[in-house]
Length: 156
Image (cartoon, rainbow, N blue to C red):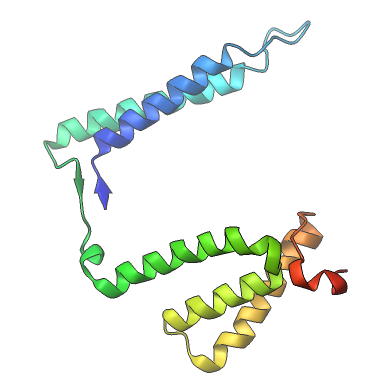
């Protein structure tokens, strides 16, 4: 789906104005001429300016539909793939605390690989390697605690 740049521009203006307006409420730092609201105000103003530029460029191009469906939306297999990814994310959010990261991530990857036509002999090794790699990246390097779920007994 493609949205008209005017809609995107209006959204950016609204977001930028909200950020800039909210940054005014930040209390100033003692003895500082620039307070904590300065950078959010600059960023908000920049977002609003980018939104205005999007609207201006869209108006120069001419009138287009507010939104248009892309060709992939009309292809059932591609629409199903999108639904599978969204469903997988919802399943992850609901199941990860109970099953744990390892089981949930591996199961999702295996299911998505099967649906997307990955060669069968690669599915299990790649799913396991990606799951372990993600766990190492988040749990060990970034220090983000991931749920162990049913595997709590073997947690390290």
